[in-house]
Amino acid sequence: MERRDFVANLGITLALACTAGLAACGGGGSDNPNPNPAPPGGGNARLSVNLNNELMAVGDAKISGGVILIRTGSGNTSADFAALSSICTHQGCTVSAYNKTSGLIECNAPCGHGSRYATSGAVNTGPAANPLTRYTVTVSGNILTVS
Image 1 (cartoon, rainbow, N blue to C red):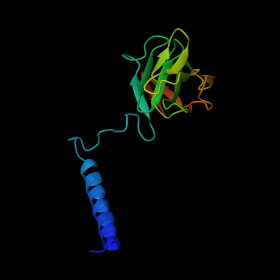
Image 2 (image 1 turned 135 degrees about the horizontal axis):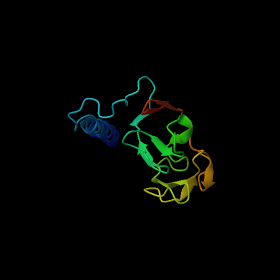
Image 3 (image 1 turned 180 degrees about the horizontal axis):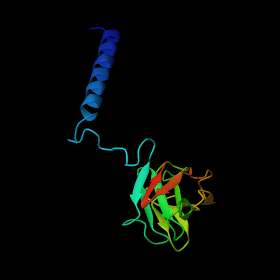
């Protein structure tokens, strides 16, 4: 076999092996056909929360489904909550927490770069340069929906 034929065959073999490996890693592992179901609240809801048992005190926060939701006031109106993307604009990881003491959203882990955001989404401390995306909050009875 000539060198040119060997290299061509080797390339085809590697391409087939990589394709088979990716296919084997691609779909299984879960009995749930929809592991990330849409939250209740219909249509374009990103997150729904029952205010009877979640986010009951000012400063309580929840990170779920790509959203960080923070209770900023004592009432049950949309103005009493901040809903933002939980994806840090610096490195794309999920923000780690809302710090009640400082009033800032922190991105500490796993990125570890230390960006901080205000509840408006504005950058308070870099290296992040862009704000977090704000989402719309609606409250109907005791159900809060982020869209």
